[in-house]
Amino acid sequence: MTRLLSPLLTAALIACAEVHPQDTEAWVGQPVNVLEKHPLFITMQVVKTRASDGTDIWNYVTGKDVSSCSLDGSVFGRRIGWGMYSGWSSCIARHEACNNIFYIRDDRVQRVVIVPTGGARCSTDPRFQPSFAG
Image 1 (cartoon, rainbow, N blue to C red):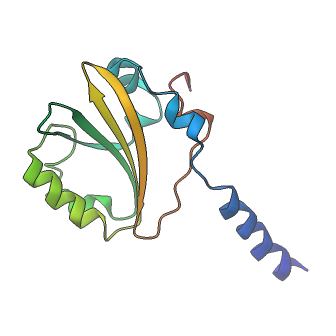
Image 2 (image 1 turned 135 degrees about the vertical axis):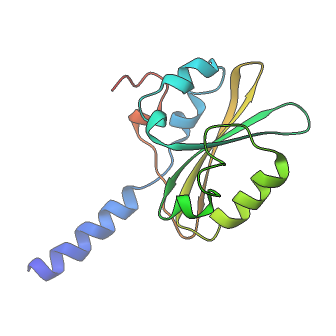
């Protein structure tokens, strides 16, 4: 019985892993300082760059072997150039990771996109929302 129950439980938990639109949409219009202080995101590595139109792109990434693409940590926390960001993105695509990408303009979040790589299953829950306080 236990042999049968374990795979069923695992399958049920994987089926629950999904990105809920209400969790990502709650960020639209939020000031960037809410994101900077958010208890979930301050625990993640962030890679920042800026698009040619001036939009800031902050990628809060979680997953296996994320640091192997970090160039000894030099991509985390500070804004890097588009070329370095593209190289990092190509590297991370080969690893199981969830990329929580925030597009920021005029110090406000414009949209949030979650992109899994390397077969990762990404999900959100109420802890993802800006109102989460820990």
